[in-house]
Image: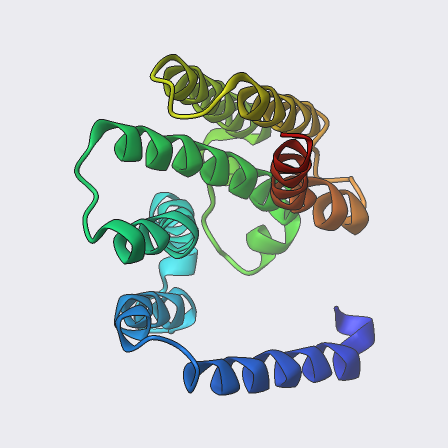
Length: 207
């Protein structure tokens, strides 16, 4: 990041431009749903609020934004409400997954956060306990997947795809430590979200 400032700024400009253009083609209801996430994202870095420096609030803020953007809003747009058992179980499964993959990044940034006096879960509980929490969250994610399958929310092919994704993610979390390269986190931990999507697309194609 520090060695490629011009490239990073170029990506930021492209992303911002795409966002502005997309606003003009988006449903007003969608923009209304997304607006609170914008405020929450700004509060994450805003000096007076300092959500980023509050360990438990930080991880739940990140997870909340991801879950609302990728699961809650699609459900609201399609159904107009989230009240039934199936939808709540699905949201809990996704929440555990996102929380679990957030913790390894705090492990990666352990020394940086110490120098910047940013309090994180690995600093409060130690690296091993932080990793254990991430593993427990992944086990809960798998538990909710089993509940979804048992409730016939999805068929066996989707369950296998999601279970395989969860297994790979759990293995990567087990391999996490503060000495791993940046590529391990960018392509490994972050890549688990892409892996999950790709596996589901493959299952859909096979079906």
